[in-house]
View 1 (cartoon, rainbow, N blue to C red):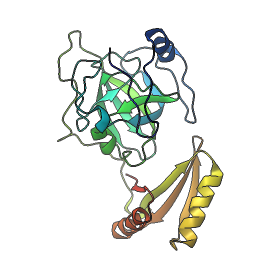
View 2: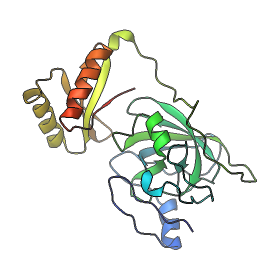
View 3: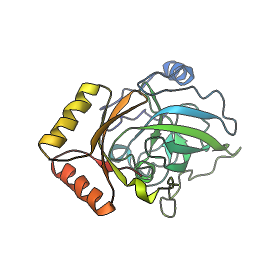
View 4: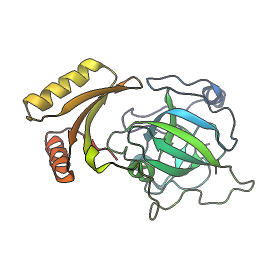
Length: 238
């Protein structure tokens, strides 16, 4: 049996008894994001909720499929889907999409529906943020006979990015909070201490996001660097 894994921002997760894990897998997930249960592994079945990622602590350890976990490859953990199923993951925060094979079990954290490898999280533009609102859709059923490896190399696998209107500019996300007061405090700090303009708070799916707009990429990169120099884990949205 593979031990359930911790997430980067949650610390260690205790192993769950098989019966409890089954209940969690079949139960309706709850959380700050809208989460729906995956009723069956049919082609086209979809689910919405929070995605997270797991990395170095489990690099080199066996997954539930028997494959050795390589955090730099494209793979994911899911509670219900048969191992070998391929899902298309859409990051609803930036529009990026990526096909990801399921080779492990998890995440065992309330409200989260999929646990991505570091390689997949980077492709989807959510590595720095840690969490993302996603929609997953079954695009390939698990084969009758499992063949390893299930994971895929990150080389040559590019996430589909939304078309960008050149006039729309670039968006830097400085933070994402459940409480609006924390978003307001960060926005105030960006305006007063870092002297940044075009700082906006956008609300969606129960989360308040602090974002800065810039028309040109060099200006966006400069803002991004200033935020990181100030100790803020910001990222450029896709």
